[in-house]
Image (cartoon, rainbow, N blue to C red; front, side, top):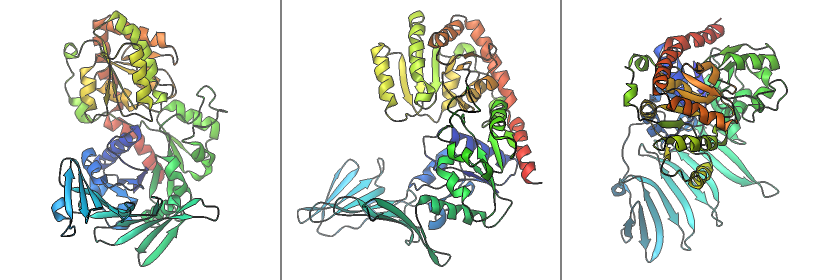
Length: 502
């Protein structure tokens, strides 16, 4: 079994989550047993799985596993199902129902979306302080109860299974100097209670239970900060693979001596604990081997691929694309350098007043606010648009004329791959790693220099001023995408599979 380790899975997914889903689908197609594994609690997890078209049998979550909630028939738990005292008065406003008894607030019932389905209930004492919160899984059963102290802090959390029993507890305790210490307990699992000093210890136990002493299992770690400790400290033998999704060093110009990317520092400082490492490009594989040697094998495997259905889809008539539309599909984050895109687009807008720049993706922190202020200061509010996260990214690629990715660092950008598969010429910084592997410079897109905002603008203008050239680049992008077909990428995975089956 191949387990793909992640922290969580949400509606808004980063490239790593998309890569895992793509990998799962590819392994399923080739009848290689695999599952995505997460460790964080989420009441709407199975709604997320439905939206991502992930079968429940292909996914294991720590809380589902210990709570006996892997597969649960869906039912509704509505306002009509919830019992309140007979003499209580209920007052509803939007998604909240206040319940009063003898003039005092007894509870607030919170509803999901525009339905009568209950999300959670907040209970109050006679002084109006919160006593507890009770939460319901979107599949219709009580899944969590939180108890509060006089200061409004959570003291205990109990996680329920669909059988109505508590299977996991989280205790918020204070040590001798008044610092909070979190203790986890797995209740009556295989007839025993087990206590863990923190989430990492419980994660380790979870991985060991998945492993069940099967030395043939392979754990591919996609989120090392959250998952590596549990993997390193397993008590049962298993194969452990480090998957590098991004640049592993802080300074790409000094791969031998640069400080490590914080996301991979612990993983790489424990190099000897891995059985293999995966990089997305030959250049990164070579850089990893140059720094750490060849004590473990380095596999080069693209994190994404172009589906057979996409390759078989007829090309979009270039004349039907929205003229002068530029898009960037990526998280709004400092490393993606949307601020450079905005600065470069000022020049594009000067020459092409009808040009538009669209940003698609969710934001990290308050960066969207900063970018909007930059747009306002440049008087570009009508032509630079923040569109948010979308599940129809292909529709974005099919509509635009140019894709933009001025990142200062990349791993293997799924945007570059997916955009080219939909005939969208890309203008992207030639940084480590990925852009130069995916883009055929001046054939399917243009590679630019990080920090050269003028060069970024000039590249866009070169293409927008010559629609015939841009159409040729679009045709080149369609053709170039064939290098990343399902079969071509699985052939790379087959090398790793064969290695572990020796």
